Image (cartoon, rainbow, N blue to C red; front, side, top):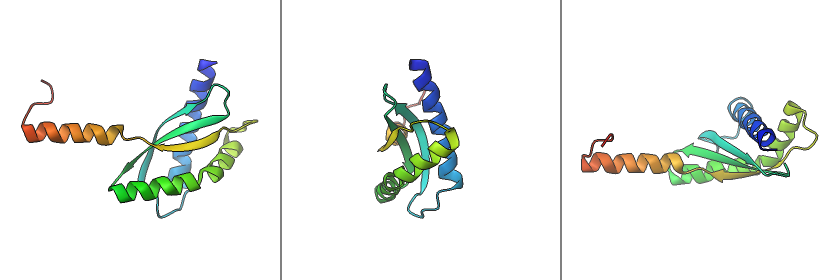
Amino acid sequence: MSQRTDRLDSQLQQELMGLLQREMKDPRIGFATITRVETARDLGHARVWVSVYGSDEERHRSLSALRAAAPWLRRRLGELLKLRHVPELTVKLDESIASGDKVLRILHELDIPEGD
């Protein structure tokens, strides 16, 4: 079952990125990237982790737009992937990149080399 969900996660991530880049025209969505997808064991739900570059307000706007678009994204995934049942999508903000940037900024402020 784990291989199946891993494969599905990868397919969902690729297709969602394609939809985000090619088909979504919502101006509220800034520079957003699908960083990972985690599908539940029963394949009924999938958590979609999104990283958004920009200010807190831009992140909030992009996240709201993506959450509002989740039903449309789910329908498009069903068309593209030919799945019998497409998992419900829950969009979450992935702050790991922002956290890494913050650590690097602090290191540079302290003038500590990154490799040490």
